[in-house]
Image 1: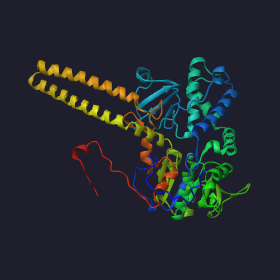
Image 2: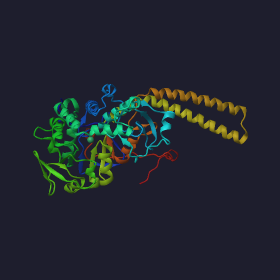
Image 3: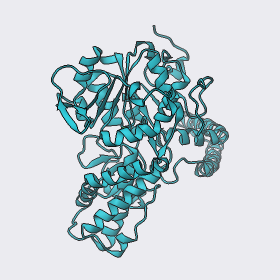
Image 4: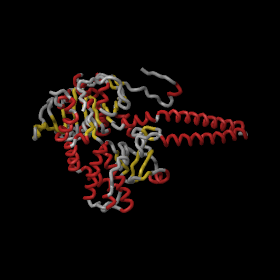
Length: 478
Ligand SMILES: [Mg+2]
C-alpha cells in the first residue's frame, strides 16, 4: 500500500467528502478532540462484518430451538435494513419516518407495507420517539439484527416459532442472541486474524490526527471496545502510516477503552489503569500516555482542565456518541456517516433529472394557481362555460405532468433499492437527518475529511431560509 506520510493534504475535498456544518464551529477554540473507534477512526467492511455477525446470530437462534428448515435456509440480505430505520417490535414492522415522525415507508417482515394495510395498523401515522416499543437502528452494527428480524417475522407469520407468541418476543430473542458476548468475541477474533479482510484502511486518517496533534490539540480515544481488540485494530489501521518511531498510542493524550457509552456521559463511574494483564484502580489524577478502562466524562474534563465547547467529540453513534455528549456536557460534536459518500454520489447523478423535476413542478404550480383564480372568479361572477372548460383542461394538463413526474421519480438513482436515501424521507428530512441536524455541530463521511482543512478552520453554518423568507428575500441579523 502506498505510504502517504510525507504527502500533504491540499486542495478541495473530493465529492462527497466535505465537512457539513449545522452549527458554526471555530476549530481554533477547540483544544481537545475525542474520538470513538469503531466506524469512526476505523471503518470496517460493513457487509463482510454484518454477514459474519448474521451467521453467528442465526446459529444462536438455531441452537435456541428455532431449527426449522426455513430458518436454516435464511441468508443475509444487506438491503433489508439500513441505518436510521425504526423497528416496531410490537407489530413486526420496519419503518422509515421523517423528521415529524410520520411514516414514509414501511415493511412488515420483508414485504412492503403501504396504503390501507399500513393505515389499518397505525391509527395515526406518527411515531412517538419516547415509545418503548420502537427501537432505532442507530449504527452500522444494526444491519444484521434488522435483517434477521424481518426474515423471522415472515416465518413466524407463516409457520410460527417454538416458544414465541408475539413479535415483541421475537425481537427480544433476536436481541438477546446478538448481545451474547461470545458472538462479539468470535467476530473480533476474526477481525484480528484477518484485518485486511474487514478493516478498510484510510491512510489519510493517521495524517489528519498527526496534523491535529502537531497543531496543539489534545487527542483522546474513547471507545467501548476492549484493549485486546483496540490495540491490534489500531496497529493495523494507523501504525503503518505514522513516522517510523511513532507508535499510534503516541497520538493520544488519553486512551480509554470499555468506556460503556452512553453511560460514560451519565454520572460517575469507576476507572482502572491497564497495566499489562492487570487492572489498577485509579486513585488520583489521570496521566497522559496511559491506557484506562471505564471512567466517565467528568474525569476527562478534570484531567484536561477543559469543558464544554473546548472539546469536540467525534463518533458514529447518533445517541451513544453525540446526543449524550452534547446534551449533558455541551461538548461540540461531529457525527461520522460513511453512507453519505454513496448518497451524495447518487444525488449528483440525479442532478440533470432534478432540473426537469423542478420545471415540471413549476408548470404544475402555475396551472394550479390559474385554476384557483378561475374558481374564485366563478364564485364572484358566476362560472361560465368557458371557465369551466379551461379548468377541466387544466386538470388534464396537471394529470399529464404528474404522470411524467411519476416516471422520472421512479427512475431516479436511489442509494438504497428499498429504503431510498438515508438522510431523506420523501420530500423531507429523515428522522436520522433531523437528529444529526439537532445534535451534531458538523457531520462528514469519515475522520480523514477533517484533513482537507486546517485544524484551525472556521466552519460556518449556512444561513437557513424559512418558507416565509422567500417573500422577503435577503435578510441579515447581526
Ligand atoms: Mg462507533
